[in-house]
Image (tube, rainbow, N blue to C red; front, side, top):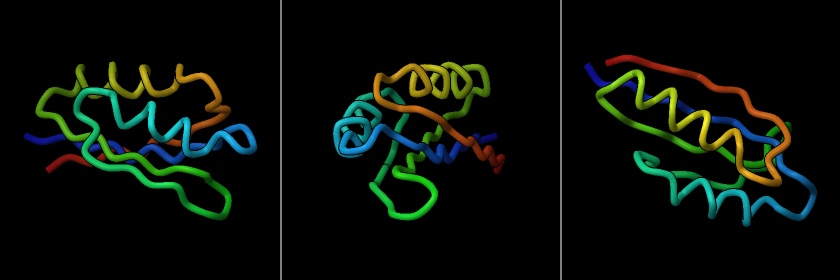
Length: 76
């Protein structure tokens, strides 16, 4: 089974690109982009291990400059 997480993040003003760049260095992050609206970034994580998925989400949540996240998890 494959697990994916889409992390919607709100960053400090002016730190969107810096936060995204740090997110993209996290293992199992497959893509990410800066967006406009309620959230500032969207990042996608894909892994076969739900425990690893949880670790990656926690790692991203600790990134400096990231104020708030919403995580959507899917299973395939």
